[in-house]
Image (cartoon, rainbow, N blue to C red; front, side, top):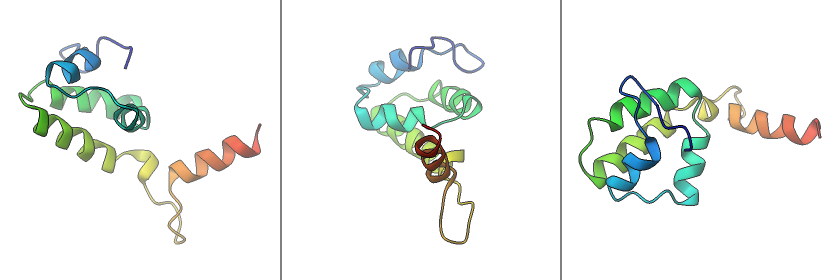
Length: 92
């Protein structure tokens, strides 16, 4: 959220969300935090064309639903996010 030059138009993500009335709550920060650098760049490019709160929230949720950390990596429904959290606990 602190990076000020996302995407091809160098979008200030925090500023754009606030301008659309989408206050960065813990939930929103968590969703953005789970995006890879490239995924966040893509989100910024899409948000640059958004003009209202609902479309901004839908766009963010859509990107988060498709993010790498939510990708299933096993038949037991484990995701990359699950694996990363397990690795972080194991390697502490």
